[in-house]
Image (cartoon, rainbow, N blue to C red; front, side, top):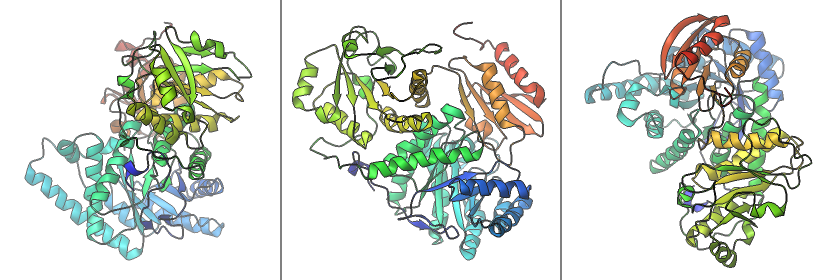
Length: 585
């Protein structure tokens, strides 16, 4: 599938088919859902019970961590118990650092996930010479190649799971700590599979940074197409967090890629009970079904749609809030709301719209003109152009608002209309989780492309309109366009997690709320922790049972702190470096 051919209408990318026990993935199969246990893999009973709960919640696959050979072998015991209880769900072993554990898992799991960042490469001092780089490449061919040969013999599937936070030093030196480095790390392993005529391969490109994750997936697909590959994609945003932020960050990354037809299986990573991930995933799948039945949007002669565009930077300055040097704004649309109470918001909306009379005054110095995308024709474009103070409130009532908005922006671009645009959509949902997933996906897709100067989410059936404002700001923060609160990067937890992750996240959030612009990483273990929170200001990482390491700017500064003292020590660390600054003191 070429991106340029389908900017307006949903069409799923056609991938090869992968056999994972009796539940195939890719090709014409439905988009599969999966999750991961957070129990100890050596606790057979607890892991089995959680797998059963996940299956009942709609998971097609369940992944379990396998730190070593012992855990890999015990996945077989869990599989036996599941089948005895009538739950023949395919199990996936999650491997880091240990080819031996991966080899063992081929005999017990239905699919094995390996991480190219640590499967073969080991820590290296100094810069790689050309000879050292080639020698390491040959080791990948030999060690991973042997693993691939055995997987092929046993009829087992593999996921090449690249994590931005655990790229090998070799790849970062050669290509950079960026989407290109992620893609090259993946392609090195993919070529080993391809050359051995082994094709039961799934790929993932994950990062806690939504921009990095989406760019890496798009670049990977392009690179695979160049080399005649079409392997299925596993989508996910790693270390997405919990509650509202975790759902919004996941929807922004996964949803916007689904909208362009990418994705054969998805995992929504939340720092919560893993069962809570499945309802969010189902909402995302529901959106793809909605886009599939949407009326086709005619292409017209509008030129090539550029995925990344500078509309936001190219727009005209209007009033006191909008222009190329301003961040996107939040407009609270309360015209149909059952309640207009917005008290208690840490960050109030930038503007209020309570009736059509507010079109002239809601944004000082500007005049709002509301149009549906279907109404944006040459006549209306010229009317808007004639008023230098115009602000276009661009609504979409189409079943595929992403395509609808894209076409409208393309019309404006062709007409060289540089009026600021606020995205507007009326959501009839009365469930907050559904609303935040939909709005994050649909509006987020345009924001990530460099389009739109703000958001106006209308949700009259939601009783607490303050929550709608918080969702809008969270979308902007997840898209890295505007920061209005403390940002938390937290992993979902797994069998490697070395402390009570859920309660710890709540404690840290309570202790550090309101530190606007500060980034805090909260990681269960060291596998991806230090890497994924490399751009965090502070980090809290499980180092051993009941022990925590604290990080500042990617470097470990305090080691082995007792878990019951670690949150207090984190706060003290932040204060000691002068970063304890709240808007209200």
